[in-house]
Amino acid sequence: MKNKSFGSRLIAAPYIVWSVIFIVVPLIIMFYFALTNESGVFTLANLASIGKYKKAFGISVLYAAISTLITLLLAYPMAYFMTKLKVSSQRMLMMIVMIPMWMNFLIRTYSWITLLANTGIINTFLGKLGLGPYKLMYTPGAVILGMVYDFIPYMILPIYSVLSKLDKSLLEAAEDLGSNGFTKFKRVILPLSKPGIISGVTMVFVPSVSTFYISQKLGGNKTMLIGDVIEYFFNLGPTYYNVASAISLVLMVMILICLFVMNRFSDDDDGGVII
Image 1 (cartoon, rainbow, N blue to C red):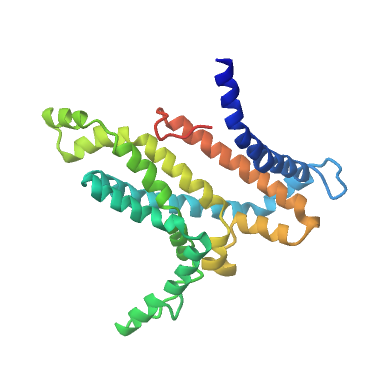
Image 2 (image 1 turned 45 degrees about the vertical axis):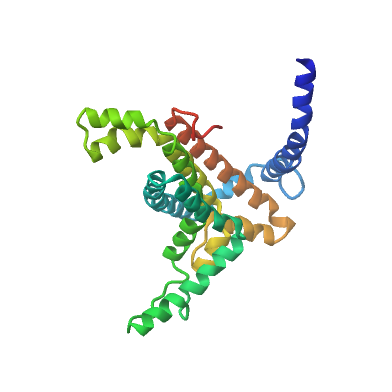
């Protein structure tokens, strides 16, 4: 048993070292800059100034919530449909869902510029129909569209994972008791798929609320999310590291609160969120 325990610790050692270097140490640095001034003296002035950026916080949460809701409405039927297919077809669709995740995030975002620009593919097609051109780029809709596209696989996969494991005998029992399709979905399928929904919502909302590249490329200067504010201050140089770290600290606390709330709604570890 001692040899097994030592072997387990030895295998886990690289992960522990990695976590300490790339997770714990950056968090300590962030806390230090957030709670000190340029001279390294302890201060709460950086946190007190967060109120200036409440609009960016609000817009970030709003856009993240909208994109998460849209993603859920699109991903759930897709995941449910996948479970009704043959195993080979399920694997094919799973491959299609995962292929965009293998591509570079920047390339995926840039592809929407080609589609949404005034001279892009969509407006060119509409022009041939005598419509447009419409302003599709640099709008809130473009930013939300980019979030939905980039993060929808993270919603589909956990929901599909839970739905594919549903006990078919429960569905048969519901039918034997006289449940129609809607009642069966409402009383059996939806409650049992809640862990996957909670996990998917978390995996989409967290990166959406902290994103910055999507808003820069698809929203232009008109859309300033909190991630853009943080990057802006870091790009200004070491003088502004303290303010940027304070904003990052508040954002991290907000995300942890969201994770805690999501975890409270999940009563099953299968596909749920664990803090």
